[in-house]
Length: 347
Image (cartoon, rainbow, N blue to C red; front, side):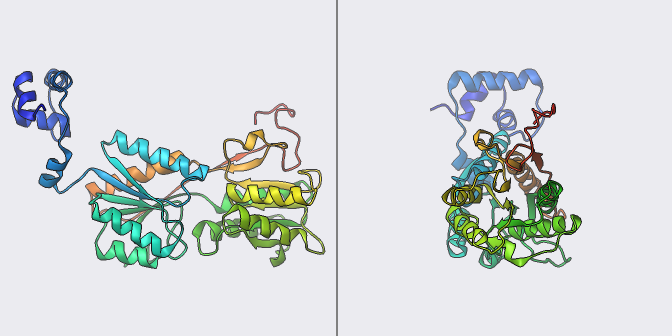
């Protein structure tokens, strides 16, 4: 197996120069850099990451703890994290906390024991154990998608956070439905305790207020962020004496459950009930009717989380920050509007 010394002899440079080229630790003249890379290719040299980590105390790896990896939204986030990490020369270790606080602590501990340089975590609804572990061991971390309202010494969050805007997009869905004449608009919200759930409820209530509609607590139900829970929640709404004429769902999994409940009741969308959803997904445009949705920038969220973490590793004392990325309103036909293409505007 070729060594760094072999590469240096082949390229006619010092071992230190080879190290600088491979690790990006110092600028090297272009022709020298190319000579080193050519030698690496010719000799088939691969970096001994284990030896390097023993010297630098860095493994150039990132731990990612995200639940429901099978969810298309989190799959997009994973793709963004992976691409950004690889571009920066980092490998990725992935674990699924299953949205369970006890399991969350376990997988974070296991990632930490594998000496990842930092972690990206989508916290559970009860992240107290997570916060305690990360703080006790001084683990560099970025919270993803879900925010944690845990005040630091300056009154702000304890860790960097990256997420989408949640409240305003839901408010826009509600006001859009109200503009179509709906006066009883229901919300199938996610799991209580998650920041995404509370923020989307805030957006729902502000949209009602903006439209001049009274808030009716019977029209807000929780679907536990899952398809089965959302199906049961929709059943409760449809069983009301005066059921809603329009629904907003809090994520893509719950949209599937709601559609299942509507089908079981023989209700058509949007003929019998209008539907808008938070979270766009690849096949939303293939449903009949096509689903009006809020699209989150999943890949951008994942990539930004990596950049924020790398900035934290490079500058541990920098101020903690929360980064919010905007969502996109994707106007289709499940809300009861004609197809935008039929109106002469792009969808």
